[in-house]
Image 1 (cartoon, rainbow, N blue to C red):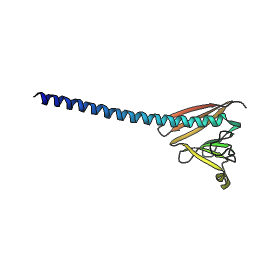
Image 2: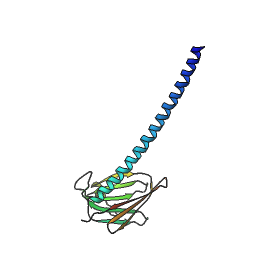
Image 3: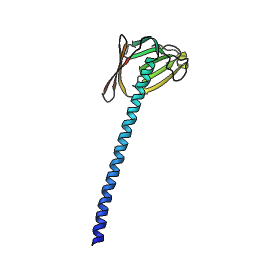
Image 4: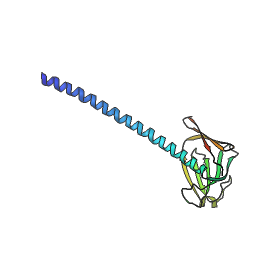
Length: 160
């Protein structure tokens, strides 16, 4: 009788320990996912801030005929080629936020030569809307993601 009781107690403890271990794995997976998303978000903002901080001259904000914003400027913060100093940020038709590093300035009408001298990076996907506003020395970016989360992000442009 004592052996049966001890085996039963042991099985109950073993079942509880398994449940605790399983819950720990689920929580760790969720935390890992959250930290990865947060790291990607911070990396995205870091690139944007570095580009604007290293910019030379004026930041041009253009709104095209489809009500899409894009910004272009010259910057020393290059990742692909140190001679490709023109940086452009825009939202593509498939809702990907792009960073274009190019030798020539981005214009609405592009030719084939532009794409031969440009690197295009996808920084963030699933963005429904991207807007840019500028006043004196601040540049304000507004992003609306697919989950309808609105993010406002401002960058202070240092004087040359």
